[in-house]
Image (cartoon, rainbow, N blue to C red; front, side, top):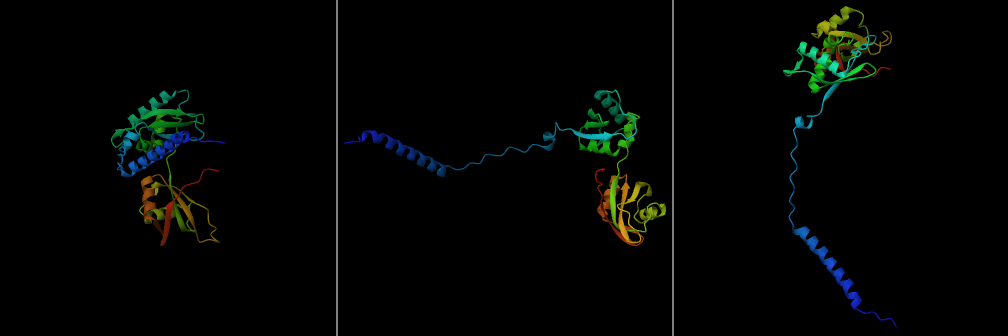
Length: 234
C-alpha cells in the first residue's frame, strides 16, 4: 500500500502561495503608485542638427568642349573656383560664397560642396556667369524655367517674332526674357484650333510670377498657364 506523507507537499504549496501573494502585491502597487511622466528632451535647433551637413551641386560643361580643370587636383579646382567667386563678389545674405570641397567625376561632371542651400541656389542660377572664369573649358548654359500655355490658338506662329512680341507686350513681359518658344506638340491647323505652347525664361522670378498669376492674354484670348517640367531625355 502506497502512503503519501504531507511533509513533502507542504513546501511546494507554500511556495505557490507566496508567489501568488507577490504577484498580488505587485499588481496592487501598480494600481496605487502614481504615474509620473518623464519630460521629453528639448528639440535641438535646426542649425545644430545640420551643422555638419553640406549642400552640394553637380555641374556639367557643355558637350563638345574639352574637359575642364584637366590635370588639376580637387584642391587645385577648389582654389581656382574660390578665387573666381571672390573676384565676382559672390554673396548671399551678405556672406561670401565659397566651395569647401570638390569631386571630379570621370564623365566630366564636377560636384561642388558648399555651406548651405542658398549658396547652392546662387551657384546654380549664375553658373553661366562664373564657370568659364575658373576655366575657359568650363562652359555652362544658363538655367531655363519653363511655363506651359494651354489652349493657345494654333495660328500662333512660333517663328514669327511679331507674335512673340505681341504676347510679351500684352502681358508686360520683357521680350528679351523669353529665351525660347515651342509647341509642346505642334497642332495641325486644319484639325485643331488650339494647342499647348511652352515658353522658356531665364528669370526664375518672372516664371514664378507668371505661374502664380495663372493666366496670360493674347489677342483677346485668356490663356491658362502652369509650370512645365520637361521629362528626361530619351
